[in-house]
Image 1 (spheres, rainbow, N blue to C red):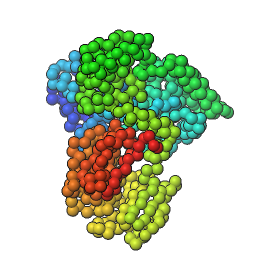
Image 2: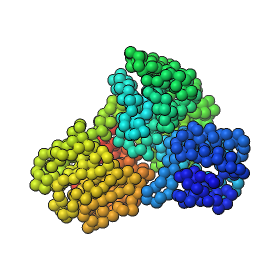
Image 3: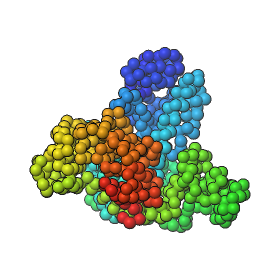
Image 4: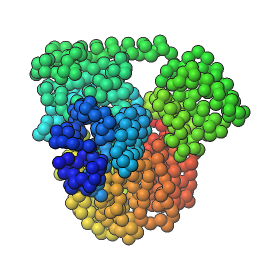
Length: 639
C-alpha cells in the first residue's frame, strides 16, 4: 500500500502511474514499485518529508535513484525535499496546497531533477501533473524571493530551538536572546527568530529566513541538548547554512553548547570549532570572534572596490556600458545590444548589461521606461538574468523604480537599519482614538483608557494579555495573545451587539469601523459583525486575506497575492479595486480607498471632492492612512 505524499493517507491506484488519496482526495503521481521493499522506501521518504525532515527524505530518495536513476517519482521527491515542500490543508476548500520551507535562488523549472522527472515520466498525463505542480511551486518561489530581495543583509544568524515539546520556552531561547542583545548593542544586525519574526504569519516566515541565511556571515547554533541540535527546524536551518558555506568560504558556523558533552554535537557540526557556553567569558569570546570575522569580511569588500553586480566590473566594462547607453539614446537598438553583449563577454554576470539588452529588446531609450512594461518583464530572459546577478541595491533598479524613488529608498534603508521603521511597526496598534475616548496598550499587555464612558467604552481595566487595541465611536475592541477578542461599549448607530466578537477564535488581525467590525483568522479567512445595510459584511467567501480596512459603509481586503477585494457601498467608486495588483497596504475612508504598491507608489479610487485621491505623483511611500476627506503617506526619505 502506497501512502499519500500530501497527507499520509492510503492511495487507491486508478492506474499504475497515478492514483487518488482516500483521505484527502488529491490525485498524484505514483512511483513504479515492483515489490514491497521499494514501496516501503517511497513511503519512508514521503514520511520524512511530511515531517519536514527534508535531509532524511533527500537521502532516502537518493538511495532509490542509486538503484534506478530513471525513476521519475524519485526525482520528483528530491525536488519536493530540496525546496522544502509541505502540503497543508486549505480550510476553505479542503484541498492540499504546497508551502515552501527551503526556497532556492534558481527556479524549480530549471532544476535538473525536475527535468529528469519530466524526461522519465511514464506517460503524458503523469508529466502534466508534474508540470502543473511545478508551476504552482514556481509562483510561490517568486513571491518569496520578491520579499527576501528587499530585506537588508544580516551579520549574524542565531539558530536555536524556541519551545519544548510541551510548549514552554527552552533554556536555549533565553541564552540566544542574551547573545542577540549583546550583538545588537555592538551594532550588528542579528537574525533572532523570536524577535525578528515577531508579528509575521507562520506561513510567511520563509522569505525572511531565506534572506537572513544567505546574507549572514556567521551562524551561531545554540543548544543545551543533543535532541535540540537535531530538532527538525533547527537542523533545517543549520544544514541549509552548511550548504551555503560550501559556495561561500567567507561564511562561518559556530556550534555553541552547554549542559552536554561536546561529542554529542551532530556529526555534521563536529568538525567545526565549537564554543562551550558554560565557560566564564563565553559571551566576550563570541563577540570577539564575530568582530574578527566581520571586520575581515569588510576589509575584503573594501579592497575589492565598488560593484554594481555580483562580480566587480572588469577593465573596459564601464566604457562599453556608456557606449551602449548612448546608442540606446539614439534608438540604435542593434548597436546598443552589441555593446552590452561585449560587456557580457568580459563579465557574464554583469547585471546592468542585461538591463541594457532588455531596453534594446523593448526599444526603450532609458532604463526608467521599464516601469511601463512591468507586466511582461517577469517572463523575459534578460530580466531574469538581471535579477539573478544583481546585488541588493540593483534589485531596486530593475524592479522599475525611478531615480528619485531609489534615492529615497536608500535613505529609508539607512533609517531601517537604525531601527526606526521596526519601532513604527512594533507600536502599531498600541494606541487608538475613538470619537470621544482614547485607549492605550501598556508594556505588560494591559490597557488604559480615558474619555467619555457613557456606553462603558473605557471599562478595560480587567483586560490582560492584549496585543492590539482598536477604538471606535462608542466601543473598544482588544485582540488577545491567544487569538480571542474582548470588547466593551455599544453601537450608537445600528445597535448591533459588540459582544458578538467575543465568540471569535484564532484571530490575528482586526479592523473596527463605525457600524461593523471585521476580523482576519489565522487561516486568512474573514469574520464580521455589525450593520450590513450596504453589504459591507458580505465577506464570507473571502480567502487568503492578510489585511483589512473599513470605510463607513464598505470593506476592503488585501489578498496574499497582492490583489484587492471590496464589498459594500460603491456610490462614489470606492470599491472599484478589482484591477489592482502588487498592493502591500490598504486604507479605506467613507468615500475613497487607497492602496500602497510594492514599488512605493500609491493608487486611489472614489470621491476626490477635496483632492484626496491626487496621489499619482507620490513615490517612496512606506505607509498610508486615510480619513473622510484627506489622505496621508509616510515618505521614506523623511522618517
